Figure 1 (tube, protein in one colour):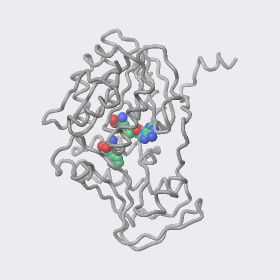
Figure 2 (spheres, protein in one colour):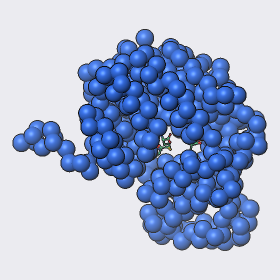
Figure 3 (cartoon, protein in one colour):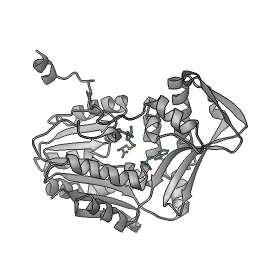
Figure 4 (cartoon, protein in one colour):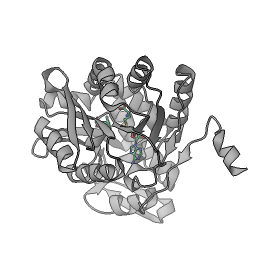
Length: 331
Ligand code: SAH
Ligand code: TRP
């Protein structure tokens, strides 16, 4: 009975991926990140329904070159990537709208490579929307959306008897610290089978003006995305943040090779977090770190993959070495 039901998943159903290790919830992260100095929050809380929508709008801004460059690399090399990895399943980490992944699925269709697609994301509404669109567009494709937090471990991903191409696009690796990224790649290597591949998209170090513009778009969409985090806190923690009392700030930290994104308090004021039974006092100019976006050098990316036991199969670069798309295999 259970079997029969599992075999015919509802169209709006995501398979939950259970955490392998305990990760704090928003209340725990807020307690450890917001009550201490310097204040910070993990970036995964950006992606509620409106956060995911705003991210899609960021991708379409003229300043945010990352999405366009990665899409062009995928369009140019999808057939090569699918040919070299011959996947029976594509499992995408932080898949969001899955928009760019269509290039890989088109290549699969052209090469008669009938693989499954498993988008894995923390945002259920994004998964359901993407899965619906993909099923309508690619009739041959079996889509299994996976809902969970990939930083809570990958051992509980559905087992699969066949070759998997893991995809981690959008320079989402950059949103971890370099240390966390190396650790995560080690985790990923641990759940890959011999012959599986990883397709990794990563942004590169470049002129600070270009970087600055990409995270401070003229239309203010990135600012809205950053400020939306306060609405998440208000809703989920019964907090009373007033977004108008904060400004978006994104700066390139040249020493650490990363964009750092902050919410800056524009006044001395207090905020109550009712569900935590506490309040915080912010002084004017005080910053809450909300996001990192690490920018990598070519060799650094290759070394990081090699260090966790993956061998580079291809390394595609956008013009001017602005963006990297790497295909690496577990030997
Ligand atoms: N891959 C897409 C989206 C990138 S935005 C692109 O390239 O455009 C980052 C995505 O990762 C979002 O969809 C977000 O919901 C998801 N995400 C962030 N942290 C996550 C986590 N810890 N576990 C699972 N998904 C996560
Ligand atoms: N992975 C994306 C990046 O680092 C995420 C991102 C883009 C982002 N713009 C943002 C995250 C603005 C927070 C705020 O480029």
